[in-house]
Length: 323
Image 1 (tube, rainbow, N blue to C red):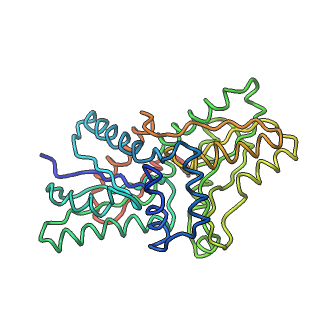
Image 2 (tube, rainbow, N blue to C red):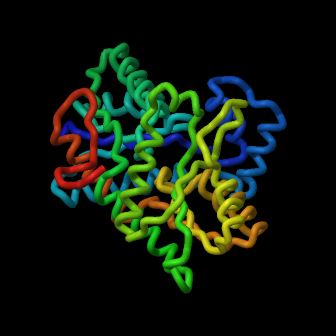
Image 3 (spheres, rainbow, N blue to C red):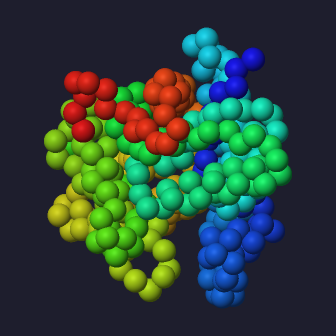
């Protein structure tokens, strides 16, 4: 029986309104949110049906990846853990030790590398430390640092983007806008490569689609009182309207599943701004458990296991594929 495994890691999201406060507190490192901010977040979750679908989507991704790897002759366990909600990454890693896993590939479901990814690594290391303290043999992690330019991932994004463009009578005149989660400006000033990797993903997708004129922006900036990366998607929509644009496709290349930042920040908030300024806005479908996307994850996992390193590997960009 194989002692290899894969661990998918996601941010997590509340599965009911009752979980929102604890989830928000965890994100805030144990600091209870002010009542006004909590109520604002609750209203957002109410607007998308009262919960985040992320846990269910990640479970589908986990099962689909296990099946894809088995189809390639590599029938190994695939686990899934969350940073801010159960099942916690550290707890899952402890369970992997109990299952006798000897090494595993750790893949954050965030394709572009950022300092935020350190939280996933810390969670894995906490689980390994707990397993060791209990006397169990801790498995060896192989961390995938980035897979923002994984070829099949780019192909899947391009196909989703084409589908959204195809909803318009004249796709060639529709303005394409790529978006990703914002980060504090200070983090980027400290050398974070996240904006470069977002730009690389957008450029590769645009090349696949055959578009040279597109926009790139950010969304979902935190309420921290400091500057975050822009331009913000809502501001970009207003600017495009002022320039006479009337049809827009938003392709959220920084996200691989539907959750609050997609279902509310784009589908409700950004679309309301678009309606206000006379723009028809369509969103490219999320990756979720799309078979092409799962194939990309399988490529990432297979390559990492083949590398056999105990530290970190970088997926994507095989020879001949530009960044």
